[in-house]
Length: 251
Picture 1 (cartoon, rainbow, N blue to C red):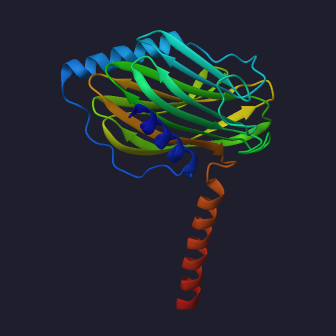
Picture 2: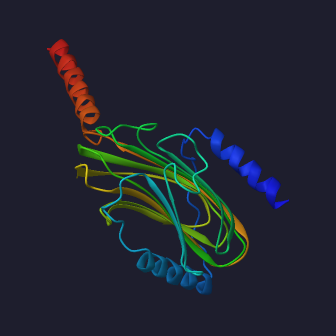
Picture 3: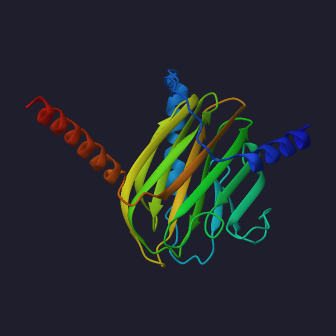
């Protein structure tokens, strides 16, 4: 049964178009003991994971489960990478209380370029009980100055919170969430300067307070050179021109 479930999730994962799920975030779980446990697990995971090193040379997918204190590191084309495509890192397996996981990271050259960064992280995680899983996909070799947009969406399982972050050399500069049980979708923008030695990392934390459940989602971080400012200015200019035209005609 577990083998069939794993194969089904892998097949679905490979067919995804990486469009974020649309939905409305549901109200947080109101049970105090579960909320307290989730906060404790999230804090423990953040402290134990630490900063992303700036010394890496290839794209790296890292899974850290804080309750069991287990870390799995998979590098592009290295041991554990089930994708033969350079720039695509695919891992599936078990870690801690999460018995079924399928995680895929996409980066250059298959997704984006060194001067036009685009990184994608798709995840599915089934837990059998209390757990805290942090998934980080990191890459370097970018030369870019401009806006970066983080588009995140998915579904959080019961008694679960999911937090989304983007980091440069281990320092967080975009945070979205935490999102509670149910569907969620969010978009954030930030300005960043990247040189080849800088490590850009996209990260998702899944904190499960109780029970068996499954969470999934997709995170797409890409270059947005002016954070949408050009479109906004053009729109404002068009409105102003139309108003002026009406005024001239009236005169």
